Image 1 (tube, each protein chain N blue to C red):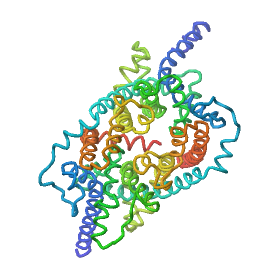
Image 2 (image 1 turned 90 degrees about the vertical axis):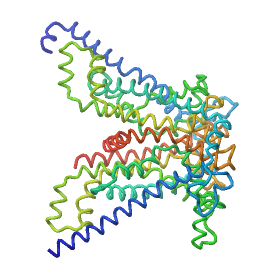
Image 3 (image 1 turned 180 degrees about the horizontal axis):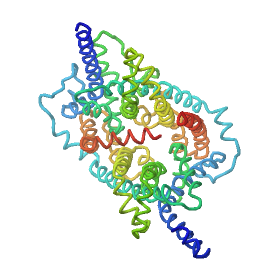
Image 4 (image 1 turned 180 degrees about the vertical axis):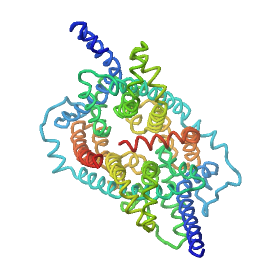
Length: 281
Length: 305
């Protein structure tokens, strides 16, 4: 009796400690966002007042209308949407096609080409960004959305991720479909893709977050203001109005909202994507 | 059925095979062509370019090892960047790894509000760096930021000048990196923890093992492959990183937060020395290849176990 009583007491202490630790960590993660939103609703003179006033007495919603006039953030927003959608769709289509061949078809040169893909996965963009830029200049594809889409749409990681998933789909299913007279394209469209929803979700989200948040790529490539993406516009805003923190925080909040919305609704897929792609290595 | 086809004669089976190959190539071509032109060619080109001199107006000229000799013997900035990169990597990697594991172990217990905690810890990873960094810089503003406000209220008369100080700029950036990234690796760890069989823990309990003993004898061996994988991922991710430095400090103050990839960027896009920049990139590549080779070697070992 006493020992089991002790155990529950110990368990309670542990439970409390566990929640305290988690709440502290959650607090550390959330405070910057809370401060950002709070500052975005203040008069400039009150942004850094100390002690911190978390809920401004007289919220300045006008900060949120002002930012759009300072820098063409809306244009940046649409440019980002355009690039993200194009890259994600192209990436999904071409990687799933290639992954099907690598996973389920036999042909000469398959393993050699696949090795080539694998080897380049390890090489980061920073290594080849310079010659890539010179090459794109030669093609006349700098300062163009098409150039960025072409650079980001055909990735080895996408092919690899899809192939790993396709490998797990039993070949007997494909054989049955072939006997039923489906062509390879038919199998890809009517069998493989519907069975691959989890990996499609993962690839879409990875591609979306990468493209939406990408900063150095558009920074290097896009020079015309009308073509710049939201992240680059936000950066422009931060440097041009560097003393106006209330507006900067309003712009930062606006830039975070699309990802936040997507994250709230699809967080399960985000998490599953990380867990599966992370574990496979 | 396959045998019946073969007896139909070799001509037919070889056209069939050719057809199959054609179909297969039609699947891989859309990706392969794009990948080849926009990624593979630049990679090969960068190797060649590192032995060349190519400044803005002047034509490309082969110069042999000159870039590498200049880099290793004369370029102080290169050595500073390399040292800073190592500093950044060596501190960020274990901190992120340790915190991610700590959080994953906490989250692996029966818990109310699990989805909430997981989302909160993970969200910074998917949030825009440009937006996050500007908030971070405001919080750590040396004159008026709330962090120093709190430190001064706690009686610290001269709190660090954070991003404005040569000593504290790198720790500030490391803090931002760890804060932003640890949730991602926590999720990877969490998946690995959930893969460890309940029975092993029950057996350990029967043997009278306490929490620590269970961790070292059951959990740790179970997540060792994941730890190794995360370690390699983090090493590569931190070694190539320079966007955070670009956004927060522009490599400063002085060259306190200038890292290798930033040096490549500056040499190419500020100074228009494309050949030289590619030579610096080869050093980055060499380091990353060493990490990758170690990974390949040990991954085999782990998967054999």
